[in-house]
Image (cartoon, rainbow, N blue to C red; front, top):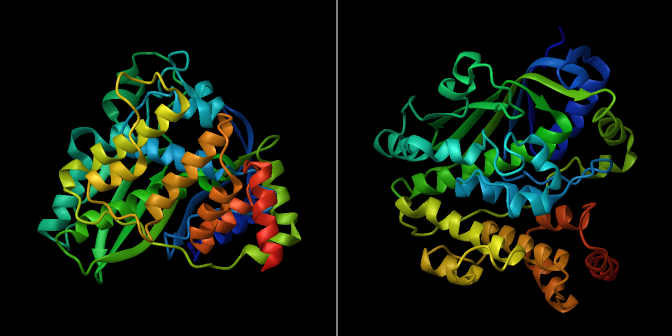
Length: 369
């Protein structure tokens, strides 16, 4: 039973590259309900800078737009797949128990339930040394064999427990997973969504303790694996690509900011952002007109200047408009791209789902530089 020692990385690209290499070389073949897999057990890795969450490795057919969209969906605390998840990740319906309407184990719905996020924030507001700032996604009342009463499900939560801890004026997070696919989970969404949550909670804590900064992120999984045949193909492509040696470095990223938002309205803020994206996809999404991103940020007193959160929203907005066939002048696209942090620029320009005409415009700019 191969284990992985705790390795320390500065960015997601290093973590994914090294994990792919280790699973391919040292993983044991294990049969699972989803087929044969190659696995290492008791995986632990530390990301020293959680803001370096953007993936741009060759061989990994990643979709930064879907990653951002799914994370906003999580932060809104919803479980319905229509329209955003179906639009960005059509195969999301394959993991639904009710014909594509919802995910029964939607992370956001469970994290916001029972005041869990509020519990973490207020526990650390009251005592920065608290050891009680934890959340659970696995719910024994819903997820055990007994509680399910023999019902089958496609969606038991892979992510189970989160522990937040402030030490040396830094907010650290550890995530514990029962099962994690390197390609579908680790590289596509899990590190991104949970470091995103970590940074947002750090911003909420800073409303009362302004000297608190962002610490490290620890990613732990009982089983880290790739499917063989299946996701092992992309893992091999990642490791074999000589070009990836150029991406195992850290480029400047940008902070997310919540400004002076009322902490009791954070979920409402993210739900407004989610609704705005849904309206772009389906103008008949609800009876209310779509709200512009700028209006939402202004209402909740969240800054837009040099704010990675605003950048994420704008990138997703432009992508949805493009995919819907709504023409965006290349001048506007270039203006957006030039305003992004260096790290996010690379993620957008080295992405298998970035519209071709965007890449042509961006590529021309890179050549000029």
